[in-house]
Image (cartoon, rainbow, N blue to C red):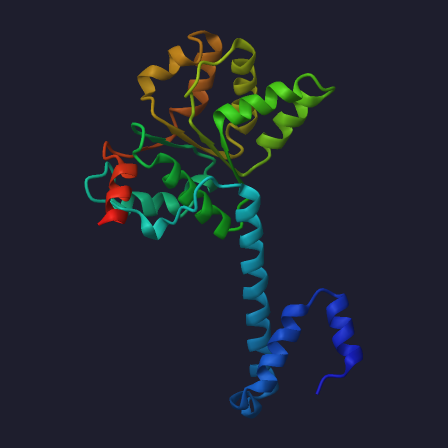
Amino acid sequence: MMNDETRRKLLEMGMQEILDAIDMQNKDIDCTVLGFDERMQMIVDYAYQEKFNQRVKRLIKQAKFRLDGDINSIYYSERGFRREDLHSIASCGFIKENRSVIIHGPTGSGKTYLGCALGKMACRQKIRTRYIRMPDLLMEYEEQSIIQNGKQKVLKKYSGYELLILDEWLFEDITESSIQFIFELIERRYDNTSTIFCTQYPKKDWHARLGGGVHADSIMDRIVHNAIWLFAGTKNMREWTAKADID
């Protein structure tokens, strides 16, 4: 039986999971016949899984997802993509390749849910992720721009995430200063990190909505050519979900 001093030392080293595993083994009669190596392996496996689960939960919380998206709860019938396509993206290979994903489709097609579901899969692979609506990002930038070094802090913050999910991309008209900020952010993230863009606008509309100038050229050049495009379909998932709940 472990003495109090040993328990105290384990707690001081942040090994609560080790203690929990030992306590569970002490209550399990079947464990008493196991050798030291087997018991130690079970203890380490339990502690590792608990630490992993805690880290994933922390990453999901820090990501600030708008929806609790789940890749295993996606509805595929009458959508614009196949299960195989989505699960291929959900493997997060695009993040290792520093590629972007563009989820496009009309209002209500489930773009945000898909983006959050993919983001959660990234968190499960211990990838530092952040979700934010484009209007909120631009508002944060404007608020920080009046503070000394505020612009640089916002750029540093959002360029540092391994995966950034920009929802409602190009949803609102963008000012010239905001276009410059978007260019700088995309430039810093280009070929170093990955971004998921959720938008209702097809590629042909992007240039005009980005101001139509050299910044628009540069932003699109860094996004669209090496991106994975996922059409969310025309089915209104909000209406379908509401009807399914009633039925």
